[in-house]
View 1: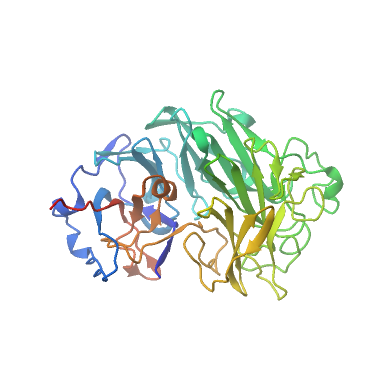
View 2: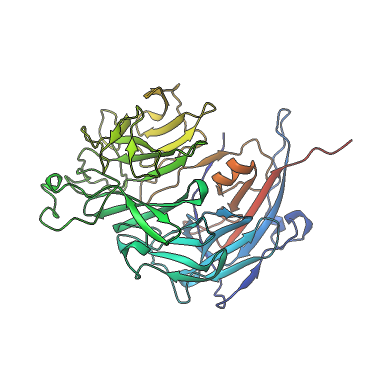
Length: 465
């Protein structure tokens, strides 16, 4: 079974500031493209194959940077348009808006003169709020605070405002931050999750008040009594709330960890959060970072309060350590040496609407547990990583991978998708996905990403007889 993860990044020709008209209303098969010879043939359909997909290229652009920086390019779909970011030569950050109806795309600089840092941690994430303003967060690697931009007008990428210097509540919360992610909840409520390292290593989740365009943290200050042994024990830590944290780390107490959270909402608009924490000290990981526990909590009030699966309330900020702060410990480490648990647990819902959590154990593979009547029960063991789970983490670099996957092995698509927009797929049954058609061309030891396609595939309609 062929699985693809939502990972990707880019390098291109220097382009003038201002609108660039890109893409075409014509489908890919209706035009003779200069790269047509590179298009691999669609796989033969087996007897039991699903109906073919009608596919068109919404956007075809050559000029991204030829580097793994592009590995994290993702799409956000809002009101008939897909939004994504790309990097041009000299690390110039561009925001792209692509109509799903096949209209002409637009590309603008995130801000005139803005360039990202020269390391692939500094990716971006995009989301639209309930009023249609486009939010961008990114360009961070242990940054002092969250870097955040908002479009000056709803659904208009021609001009962005940098809010991070306008006051702490004008940007998502967190200090000494890396790995941002925007989540759009029911009714367009926008949430932001990020790894924090101040006052302790942990997860900071913020929510946007769209009327005032201000952000507030979900969680609370870490109790001073819990900071014994921390370098920050004698420093002022009030006003730096956390959503979840632990006091262990790679190298000893309060040392390096890489916690991440995923947020999903069920059909009843209940908010479900799954996250990983390291609750035991380990030696320095040297490229293979680890967690020890996968935890879960839900909220019915937008994150003001959190509860375990049995309905009991959790004191904030959440932890893996037993006590009133402990969230549901869905899965814990194996008994051997680290690495233990994958950094990116997943959460989905089964056909009964029950939360289904996936946890990767580096020794025993993937474990899948379902919440029923307040208790977590493991499903049949799988040796692989099924749809919805992450791939193994690279051993040689300190960076996160996205976790969503789609099984496309039975779909007759002209290209193998690089990243699929999961929300749009769930809502419509259609696939919006990015493709790097020349990624398998290597120069030295680096894949080429300079050409990017944004594709739309829909199940083909049966022809009337």
